[in-house]
Amino acid sequence: MPDIPAARSALRVLTYLARRGGPVRASTISRDLELPRSSVYQLITVMRDEGFLVHYPEDQAYGLSTLLSEIGTSSLRTTRIGRLAQPLLERLVADAAVPVVAHLAVLSGSDVMYVSKVQGFRAPTVVSTIGVRLPAHLTATGRAMLAQLPRAQVRALYPHRGDLIRRHGTGPRTLAELDAILAESRSRGWSSEDGEITPEYASVGATAIDHNGYPVAAVGVTFRGVAIEPGAWEPLGEATRATATALTARLLGRA
View 1 (tube, rainbow, N blue to C red):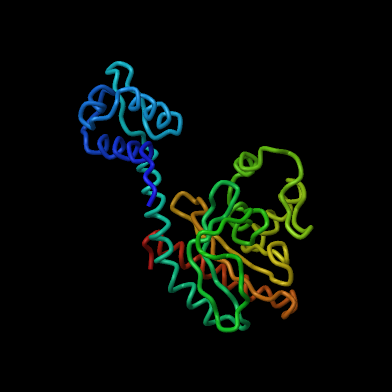
View 2: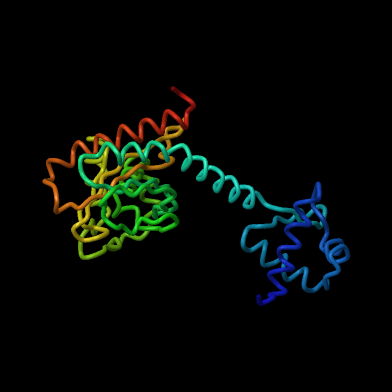
């Protein structure tokens, strides 16, 4: 296994600071870890630039920022949501009238990231593997979550006013077209996409919310769009919405 001294030293500094009760001077870090002072200052500069450390000018010392705890909290929250959603996804797949893949996604900037998945019998093979990211505005789960955000926040996620990313030549090209899709999603309580991620496959999705009304995750199902009539999508959409509502209840600690 290759050894990368700078990476190892950076991790040692982070671990050292995590065990200290307050900010520490660079000279103290250098002495206690037996690292050259010049190397410590270089590491500190990089870690400050990346948001991992903060400087306490009055003490001429350094400490951990909140970024590490936010990363850990986000990971734990995603794991918790995935565990709460898993039996609901399994039930959703079992009750579907057609072969489907159910998945759970969270919003990460202007992308969705898939955190849980249940593959039904004879269901299509999909790209929504756990950990995969896709443009939120092209996915049913992403549209479900974007539809629950204030318009200003959606604009903040898409600051460039040029054409939106598209796959296979389909999907909204402009923010105005996306606005219309999100308005329709809000009106009926679930969203959809047809061939915008994978040709011949379609998806529907609905969002679960937290106690602040924020879209914390979305439940979606993917199926062969060419195999059923668009009118038959509504039962799947309503089932996804019911599952998302059940997940919301679990997240809020309700029966």
